[in-house]
Image (spheres, helix red, strand yellow):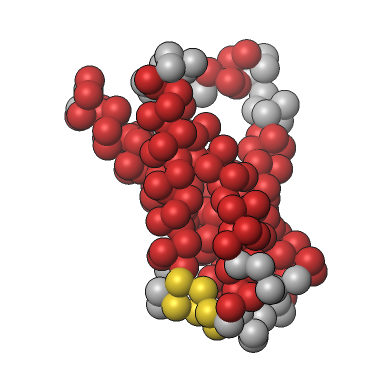
Length: 204
């Protein structure tokens, strides 16, 4: 994610920056999904669970904070531009997925079968979710940036640690099964919780 420390004073939200960042995020997503799919073919059991969870944590951190690295948001408008980068990343992945990945049957598309062969009953939800992840990450970034600099790796690390804690809580209380999909849920909950946490720690 470029350098660990970023200044939050100089935002970048020109059209070229937004489009290029969205395209890069989409490419990162494609690479992550392909690696994730291939991984499930060669490992199983606990090893598969651990490796898939690591992929989810890293992928979630990239999707949440890479748009902020590109935009450097510090107010409502620039947070929205970062969310747009997340949306463009999801759109880029959708195009590549439809044109190249699906023909190779890299993974099953159960959701398509449920939708009568169409993915457009759930794909827009994926787009919205992607924008929300980038939006929340940008919100955290802008709050942390009040101090003048943002350690992006450290900030993403806080969210990741929170995700591990949420996952452990869900597993120990048996509110959810020990599954990589639950790790994705845990990351989302941790990212939401990181917003008020960052606000309390970085009050002006």
